[in-house]
Image (cartoon, rainbow, N blue to C red):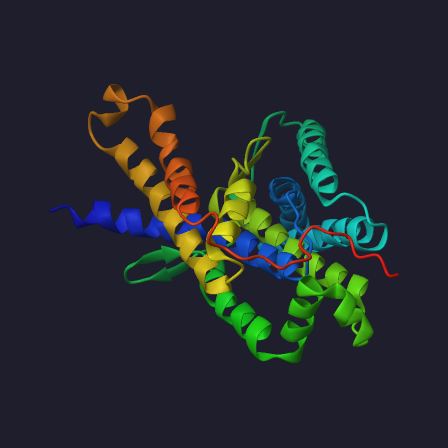
Length: 299
């Protein structure tokens, strides 16, 4: 038995689950407060690009920080439009995704690398090297963060306020909770985690930026949120499921004779189909906040 194959499968799984987990857990916070953001795909893409610029300017840690702040900024704009101006959350999210496509394509042109930019090795985040292999330092964060968010949402006053705003904003308002501000901060923090995930992909994991870098991960993260029922620990499980099937697809392609016998496009479908099948099994059984997606207007 070739254990190197299985170790490679495990390592790729951990790296692949990071962007899904961070993005999904962040979206859990925003949706718990009553705002849903389908612009996660765009946030991942924009932050991957800006994170690369930050890494070029001051190293990989700055790159991750820039990606985080990029997501935070996009989240603040989204929150202002949807929480304060009562704009359509669906349209605002689509706008983010469309803007990202044009912004990154133009940015790559400016960098002189239209379509594909390779992040210099010296500004990529160094892995943690152990006796069993190398791992990105972001992996432990992605594994621990869902537990922290679970504790905040279920065992703190802050979490109680976030849930109250998403479930019954009228009652929360009467109780003195600033509904719009709570929604703004919740969705901004969630978008910031998506921004960190985007920077991770370019600065730590894949080492490149393309117009298709996000590759549907933002939408898979949304599907993971549905699967989790707004429970951060289940969002982590969803991220691990996607990460496993993505690594499985990569592993299968590396097997002798497979690449010649099976089209790579078919194998690349595996993680997406598997994740959607899992989500399809729980749709209808999940209960979301009553005010999710409904702009709150004080009467």
